[in-house]
Amino acid sequence: MSDSVIIARHLSKVVDAPEAKLTILDNVSLEIQRGASVAIVGASGSGKSTLLSLLAGLDLPSHGEVILAGESLGMLDEDQRAALRAEQVGFVFQSFQLLDSLNALENVMLPLELEGRRDAAARARQLLERVGLEHRTSHYPRQLSGGEQQRVAIARAFACEPAILFADEPTGNLDAVTGAHITDLLFELNREQGTTLVMVTHDERLAQRCEHALHLEAGRLKEEQV
Image (cartoon, rainbow, N blue to C red; front, side, top):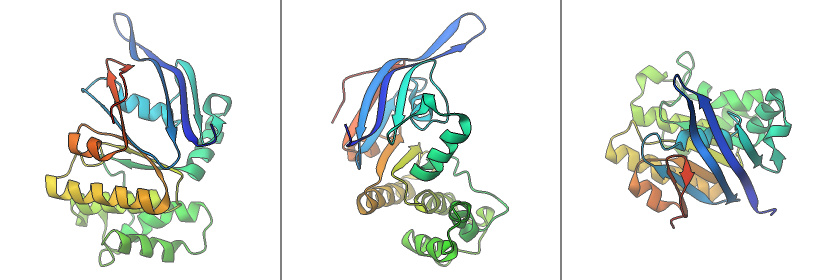
């Protein structure tokens, strides 16, 4: 049990729709081991991003329980969940989610400064060098290509050495070559830091590189594919 960094028990998510209640997730249970790489795959509308949001504590289920890094999310209030995410979790989104008013260095420094790290600038520079952007530290998001923005986002996500990294279609807005570089980077950092990697993806090649694949179909979890 101690090796499971994420445990979901009987998760369901039901929302009100104009004509009837809509079940987005239906009785999903799973366990993810510390340091694993896991892809969540399925057709559009199958509930992938909803499941990711529930596992990360960004949303709460209608029924069921998520235990993240040993904490039952349903027992925590919103501030406590945010504090747990800040301590344990990193995020990489398809839309990059960089702050336009901050340059690359400042975007990566932000979570470190929020932690009160005195070495925020040095650590951010180290990470930007690690992702090949040491010459772009003073550039703003609008001055960076999509692939460069995603590399800044990855550097920021790994800044506080999270136990778990959630990625929602991390290569979705990138061309094939850039997407392959981003994928390599995610798995390199996964191995080097022992970070648990959980990603939603429609990219079969990306899913195949993960140790495990969780297949959702109409909100239900099918048998695991390896």
